[in-house]
Length: 81
Image 1 (cartoon, rainbow, N blue to C red):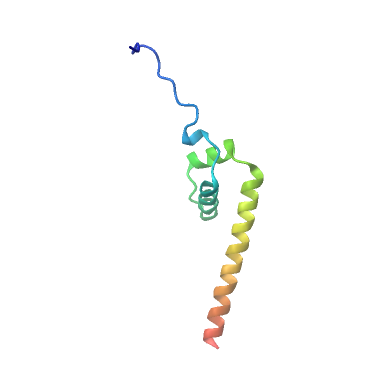
Image 2: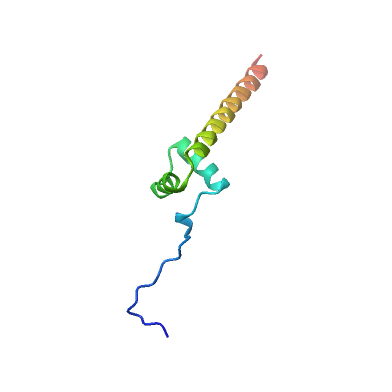
């Protein structure tokens, strides 16, 4: 039987302490782009994330965003002419 006076040990790999996966990186990139990143996720990203992965994700997001805006503008201009 376990003595209740002993402090409980935390599990070593909690979700907050693990490396962010693909979808966590995507979510963090989108949240950061729109300015709604939570402090908890930002700390996780800086503590466990790889800098270059977030740079690449940011560049990919930026290129996709620009391509989307350009496509929408072209579609609108074709419809107006």
